Length: 111
Length: 110
Image (cartoon, rainbow over all chains, first blue to last red):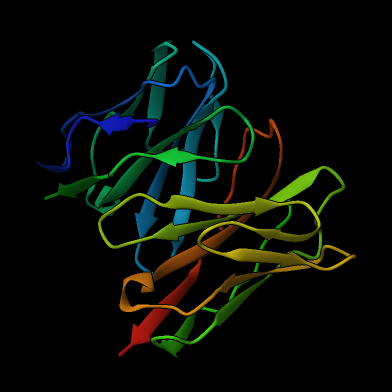
């Protein structure tokens, strides 16, 4: 089975802290994605990557950056966390066929 | 990318067939239609994918009319465990920017 693993299921951080969310996939997928999910807003794309060291902005990249140094790992970085970044963060990967494989999610609370 | 529109919510009873329709008026020739299911506190899970006409697998059917401007996910004989949010996604193969709509929250009652 494809496995997408997110490093933390729950995190609590303070405003201004730097936050790293890690995602690892074991299926050699080229494409990886970071979404955030908020009640009533569905899934919103933050960043995606189609190759190592490549990244593209999604719909809501402000306040976030990403890193993809290895094919299997895609990291989401909040340089200075703010309360409006409290959310569920979902990582996904795919071969590019439209079938995404998601991790279990990381619920971030920023106080 | 094609924008999708789905009903916000639907209610059903156990044993009934549920049909959830997604509108995608601007679908492109190369776009496929994919449906996902999401339970609370979990990531979405792939259900079914199609390009045109009808696709069926062990959990659902997907109906796509000739103009492909909409699609319908059909869940036969739903159970309580089908209570979830259902998303349709329209994108081309190797399209990197995959945008989801707001989904349809299905509530199944006993």
